Length: 394
Length: 84
Ligand code: SF4
Ligand code: SF4
Image (tube, rainbow over all chains, first blue to last red; front, side, top):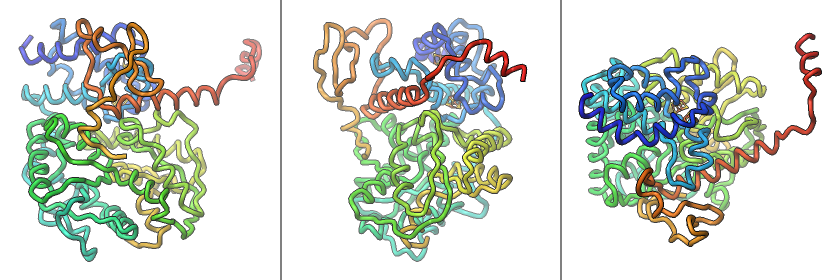
């Protein structure tokens, strides 16, 4: 077995045996990929079992790299796994399937095993310093969404807007900016904003991810930034899990999730949603907020503060909520699988008899909107809905 | 409500709960770290992660309790259902 594989197997062996020996496969039933494919090679269990086989010298990363594409990084498996949910905090040792999947993907890239879609995506991202989410956009236009809003650059607090929202869904950051302005909350924009690097890290292009992170942190430091507001759950993960890993103690930036901030401003009475929004809605928990971070109450708090809304929540353990299929680079490499997962998610919304699915993640919106068309269910962003009720048009 | 590296990576000081366990957060027990250095070493656990697991478990159990079966269904009834 080549050395890198051996070292990798050593690093992950305890967790792998922990899973292999208990093998209850609770994780399977909440895994969105398993739910639509029933392919055992793509189950969280298999991802761990492969490490055991790697350690035994029975397989190499090139044999299984393509299997590891089939994960959205939603984290549901970790929270369904008894080794996390019932003993993880007790032993300070929990199942880390998401990190394992990222690890195998990056091991594959280091060994020269590439997935064609991801390779191209990351080449384009490296070239443009932002993700190739839409045609005809460029680094110079990364702040175009803020046109006419009279926002400054730099300052103690800045708003980081992900590539998908900046180029494809500008009404989301515009809504956020208007709402914060209304509450009298001061913030600026980033000077030269590059991609956060999160998607590169998820697809295994770790060096690129670090390069982007280093650029962004240096840009913040140069502008005297102490606090970064984040509206995209994926960025939130990158800044609170990847950046601390890269920079350790020297990562002295406070990271604030906009939804949490808005819930607090509503609680304090600094924002009072008053215009009724007559819709029957359910809420789509972004995996990165709910399952990965345990943030499911604040978005519901915001929803419940909006008059006129009829809100039907899912009857489910909140942490096992459904995935949109958009995460973890799956949509880049296997769009048909993302579409299937989105359709399944929409089916669950349809069962509740709603006309609108509210999201809080710019990345989930694209596939969910496509799936909603077939069922005449609209998809609306939570920040935009709040802006509407506050009477500030994007 | 926000993430700060120093806050997350500095767990509250442990209080001894038994010979083998300590507590850092109210009602959250942890194996004495001294006992987890040989076969399985502890992972880096930011505070949010511990609290997330605890809250997720509570959420899970609340759901289970809300859906607790309140009647016994006989095998015969189930078979009847299938025949219909
Ligand atoms: S990941 Fe957890 S739930 Fe899934 S098979 Fe392994 S130990 Fe069981
Ligand atoms: S993170 Fe989500 S998609 Fe990936 S294996 Fe776990 S449940 Fe499946």
